[in-house]
Picture 1 (cartoon, helix red, strand yellow):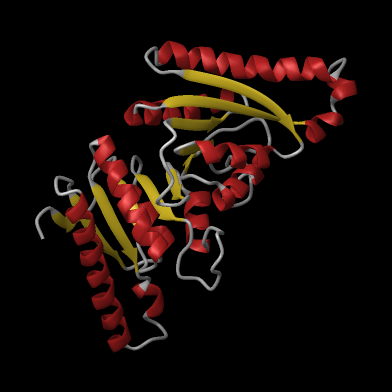
Picture 2 (picture 1 turned 90 degrees about the vertical axis):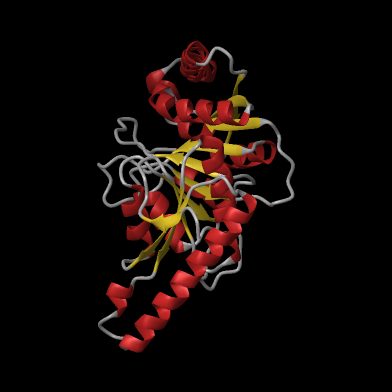
Amino acid sequence: MNNTVSGSEPSSVIVGVDGSEPARQAALWAAAEAERRGRPLHIVYGADTDGRALYVSAETIERVRVAGRELLDETAAAVKERYPGLVVTTEFGRGDPVASLHRAAGLHGTIVVGNRGLGGFHSLMLGSVGLKVAAGAKTPVIVVRGTDDRSESGTVLAGVRDEHDLDCVRHAAREAELRKADLRLLHVWNVLESVGSVVTMMDDVTEIADDYVRHLTAVTEQIRQEFPDLTVQADAEKSVSVAGVLVEASRHADLLVMGGRRASAYLGPTLGRHTHSLVHHSHCPVLLIPRHRDTHGDAS
């Protein structure tokens, strides 16, 4: 097939496939994102043949290889039919899916995964592979959520905690520019988390709220300076559930951008609790930007 080869290029959009319908939809969504960015699309099937070699026959391994390559060819053909000008590459990974996707992304690629895979749960929850990919990634990861028939809102939504999220918001601004969309910055103040600090840190709840707004305003002003042609809206809300407010807001967004994994001080790769909820329940695709340094405790 023309333009279908092995190996990825720097800054490619990387998508994992496993034969499931969510993975197929993720591949088509990733193709649209690659075309929007002017980047190649790299399709990966992580077969884990190296891990299986010790306990299955050579014939079984060969069947896995044949099935995997057929899946890659079929997915690439479906993508090329819809996006004929897109450069598409494929990769049969001998390692497990998570390691294969991280390796393919390298230092600059963006990984795209479906909202669930071939596991035994037929719910809307993110599959275990997608969750591990998101939690351990050092590059951006997009979890494709939402329905195919939802109309575009013309809005990219970014969850903002404070100035430490500026890099995340810059990614959101670039995505909004690519989509010719508006950018909405949303800070959610968790009332319950702040109760214990009212006496020791500030005089009253109003002063705490004003402090959170100052953080949001600083980020908003910086983004407006860097992206002068972009329409930027900033909102602050208080709630007992940060994730609940963001999930509801995602109903009216084409993409939700959040900080990804926690800082390296935590034991093992993991997502912040709010981010964990969003990749399971958001009504639109979620773009996770890794946090490489975080001095403010639990990442969103």
